[in-house]
Length: 261
Ligand code: FAD
Image 1 (cartoon, protein in one colour):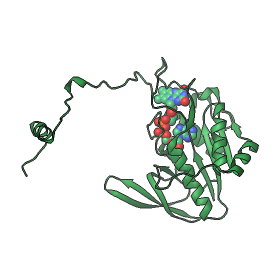
Image 2 (image 1 turned 90 degrees about the vertical axis):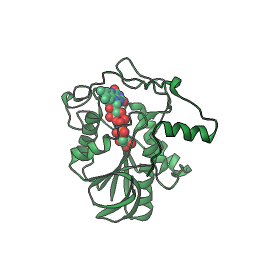
Image 3 (image 1 turned 90 degrees about the horizontal axis):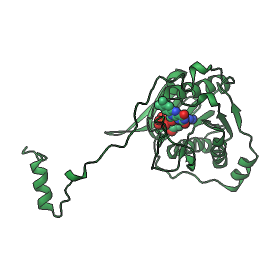
Image 4 (image 1 turned 45 degrees about the vertical axis):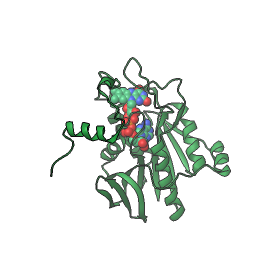
């Protein structure tokens, strides 16, 4: 069984800063693997422990410095790593990112059963990339996956977290899953994995390698235009701290918070 895990390098900060083009400032900020993608890797590793002949390829679209993140994924137990990197990818929105990842998979890794993504990236946070990849590959997708219950050569049973609770969905391969923070703590790298990572060559593909033109990727292939990015303003003057329960109940009642029914 062949699994592709899509991972993204994100700034190691919640204090996001913006460039003058309204994109996220990435230079000069320490980078980490997107936390949800660690859980995507973990689900793939759990399948590798329970099933025979599982091969995990970790894939990212990003700058050359993303190699170090891919090596960390190899140290955790993934088998191969692919970096899609080209200056022409700069300025890609989620549609162009999805198209680029899908083209790399179609052209270079067509023999897959399962693609696992994180549900969100903590910087862009649109949750669009996974569904966009699935759509462009024309395969089924399951989002908000909390854990994988059962899996064989043909299909997987994915447990989704929904507002009403949990629901289990059966999906046949090839398919794409977007995973949330799972129930289990992710594995840590072992010494053998770290040594393997040091000796692993990362395969790098350019725009031409994956069969795209400049019109289909990067800023030219991106229908989104970010006109303004800003922090919402909090009007603290309207905030009142209630020091006792009676005042709290009174305020909620004033705001119509309690119903008589
Ligand atoms: P989400 O959709 O929230 O991520 C969900 C999951 O998808 C992740 O957990 C991961 O599994 C997978 N995933 C997401 N991104 C990748 C990836 N790159 N490789 C592999 N898997 C991935 N970003 C830049 O870095 N440089 C730019 O120049 C740039 N320009 C932009 C211009 C515009 C107009 C816009 C709208 C965005 C731009 N971005 C740029 C941001 C970039 O489009 C998004 O970061 C990217 O498309 C992923 O979206 P997201 O962060 O919302 O991820």
